[in-house]
Length: 87
Image 1 (spheres, rainbow, N blue to C red):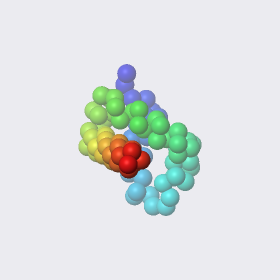
Image 2: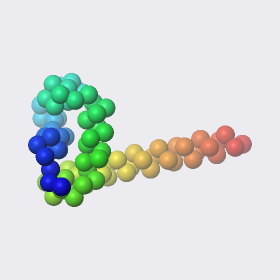
Image 3: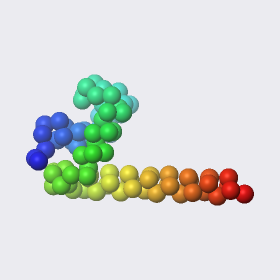
Image 4: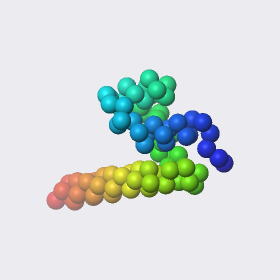
């Protein structure tokens, strides 16, 4: 399904929010009318779509890479904690 206006707005915001300065969470609320939690939920789903990748491949690949690195770090922490608890 092609990107709708909201999807494009999310990607465009994520790609350029740092240029506006200030707090990202406040910018999410004021510019997009979303809570930060909802924004990240929508963005997380969006970056797994082919249409998002076609819209801004560099941004989407960077966001996927960051997400995957955080996920790996979280899993490593959990495994490390489980090993410490087994002693």
